[in-house]
Amino acid sequence: MTAEVPIYDIVGVGFGPSNLALAIALAEHNMGPGEPVTAHFLERQPRFGWHRGMLIETATMQVSFLKDLVTLRNPTSEFSFLNYLHASGRLVDFINHKNLFPLRVEFHDYFEWAAAKVDDVVSYGTEVVSVRPVYDGSEVAYFDVEASDGSSLRARNLVMGTGLRPQLPEGVTAGDRIWHNSELLFRVESLRGSSPRRFVVVGAGQSAAEVAALLHDEFPRAEVCAVFARYGYSPADDSSFANRIFDPGAVDQFYRAGEPVKDRLMRYHGATNYSAVDIDLIDELYRRVYREKVLGVERLRLFNVSRPVEVTDTGTVTVESLTTGERTVLEADAVVYATGYRPADPTPLLGELGPRCLRDESGRLRVSRDYRIATELPLRGGIYLQGGTEHTHGITSSLLSNTAVRVGEILQSIVDRRVVAEPVGEYAISGR
Image 1: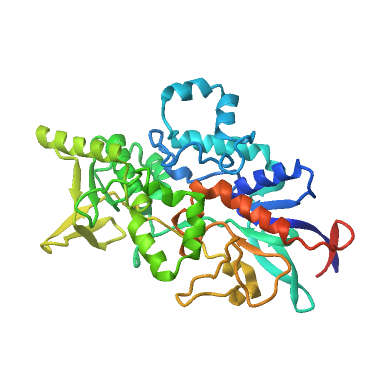
Image 2: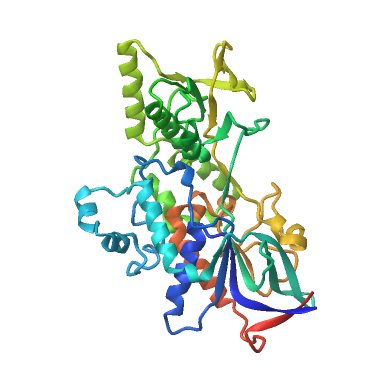
């Protein structure tokens, strides 16, 4: 049996902010004089969404609005956050606000506004099931992408934007009373009216602090116990010089550095992004703790220099002090782990190509400067990563800070490496 399979220069796996930014870069490229680049993106969510479970109404972005989907690549783009504000009738209001950091819900609305402008190149509610290489002799000429709806696309290049996966500590299993902070708003909604008595929040970063503050607000009769190994919440280092680690040029410097230097840079500057909290939120939580001590009713309890050593499915948490070994047993209605995310491993989707992707001594994917995965087999096109490249490209490589520049580099790589001699016609015949 044969079927016509559409050929695209790019098939994007996932449609979060990174591949959305790539779709925009493609749209702008195709409006220019150069040869158009064709693309289609597959997204398993039914509509665009970015960390919806943490879209707390009062939470702000931790990056400047100028680090949007386009500005650092193309400051004149119609897809900028400023143009979104103008279209929304809030540009003057935002300027008067005198703030570089928009509300998180507002930035998400900006993403949705931008996604609606390029929705002709994305199929929502469609998950990539597998990728199969198509050979021309010993060379992989195309990638056949099989989707959950039974459709198939043929790609010259793949761009993997598979996002992040919530990370729970080893041995912890999610359940009705144990969940990751990524589910926060959905779980809070389900708890309304149930009069919870106690929450335990595990973690010391921005998300953990936001979760503690929101639960403390939303459930005024409940106790919120924050458990973390540090002495206190540590402020994010967002000083001007430290922030240069997020400059696009820092990616080049990091990529060229040797492994000892890379390790050192990650240790030096981890506080710019990991396990760090905005100072305003730290101050607010401290005010609450102090106020409650004055009033004699302590609902926000900090178990610092401590760790949970046992957590049961019923919500019983045993907290151990790291200094004294003293243990405290807490009966909780919910245990919330704000323990971060891990990049999704894209290689299981690649089928027989997965084991042929090259890795370093630590088992991490080898990635070229243009974000292509190195493989044993020769590829006519490339498999590009949007995320999971911190070990090669540094902290900023997969963050919003560098999204606009990164997608420009990926697109330029694809254009530069395009094979001149292409098959005649828009479709290839795939044997089934």
